[in-house]
Amino acid sequence: MPHLLFNSLDNARPPRGPVHLAIGMFDGVHLGHQAVIGAAIKSARRDGGSAGVLTFFPHPSRLFAPSRATELILIPEVKRWLLLQKLGADFEIEEPFTHEFAAIPAGDFVAHLSARITGLAGIYVGENWRFGRGREGDVAFLRSLCEASGIRLFTAPRVSLGGEPISSTRIRELIASGGIEQANTLLGYDYTSFGTVAPGRRLGRTIGFPTLNMPWEPECRPALGVYMVRVSSAAGEERLPAVANYGLRPTIGDRTAPLLEAHVLGDCSFATGDRLRVEWVRFERAEARFASVDALRAQIGVDRARTAAYFNL
Image (cartoon, rainbow, N blue to C red; front, side, top):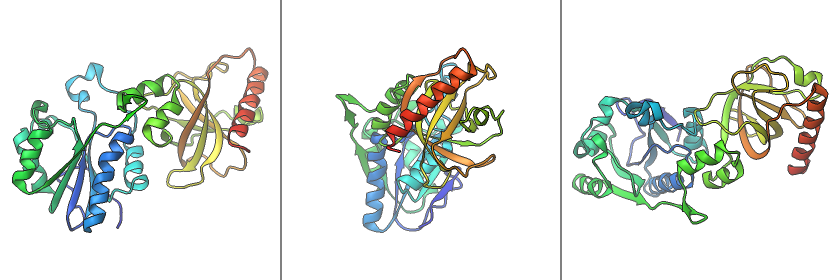
C-alpha cells in the first residue's frame, strides 16, 4: 500500500476499507505517541484496513498565545518521514489548525470526521487528549460520541520512563540543554533533522576537514555545539558517521544564525543541493571560540578522533 499525504481533512482520500485513525499533535512522535499510532496500525493490519494519522500544523498555541507559542520539536517534513516511512502508517492528514477548525464544537467532532473519512472504524488518542471548541471535550465524552456512531475508541495511557511521564515538554528541555542522548531515549529514535547542502566558504576543506553546510532553523533549537551524528540522503539509508557542529562559528565570526555543518568520516558523495537527513546521536561539547584557526583545527582533530572511536571506526 502506498504512503499517502493529505493537506486537510477536506482533501483526504484514504484507501478503501476500515480506517483506523490516530489523532494528536504528536510533536516529537515520542514513545508515548508511538503507543497510540502503533495501536491504530496493529488494528488496521488485523482487519485488513488502513492506518492513518491526523495531525495539525501549526501548534494551537500559535493561534491562541502567539507571544508564548510552543516551539515544535519537529518540522513537518521530519514528522512525515517518521509517521509514514519509519512507523509505517498508510496515510497522514496535516490539518491546518485555523480558527475555523478550533471552533468546531466537541459534540460535532466525530460527525465532522465521519463525513470526511469514509469507513472510519476506529479512533486512537492519548488518555488525556482534549478536543473541540475551547478544549471542551475529553476522552469520556469522545467515548460517548464514538459509541453512538459505532466507532471503536482506543485510549493509550501515558508512557513513563525514569519515574516521569514522557512528554514533548520534557524532550524540548533536553534538546535545548544538550541532553540529546536522554532525548533520544524518550523519543525512541535518534533526533532527526533535514537540510539542503548549501555552498560555503570552504574553510573546512582548507584546514583538512571538509563539511556539508546545511542552513537549518528549527523552532526548538538544540544546544549550540559539537555532536556525533549520522548522515543520509533524505530518503536513503546510508547513515554515514560524521562529526557535526551546530552553531555560530565564533572563531570565524561570520554567522548571525546557527549553521549545521557535518564532516563525514570516510568517503562522502553528497554535494551542494542534496537534501540530507541527519540523525543526532551524542552531544560532545559546547561551541567555543578559539584563539586561532590553527587551534580550531587541532580541536576538530580531537572531535573527529573521538567520534571515530565512538562509532568504532
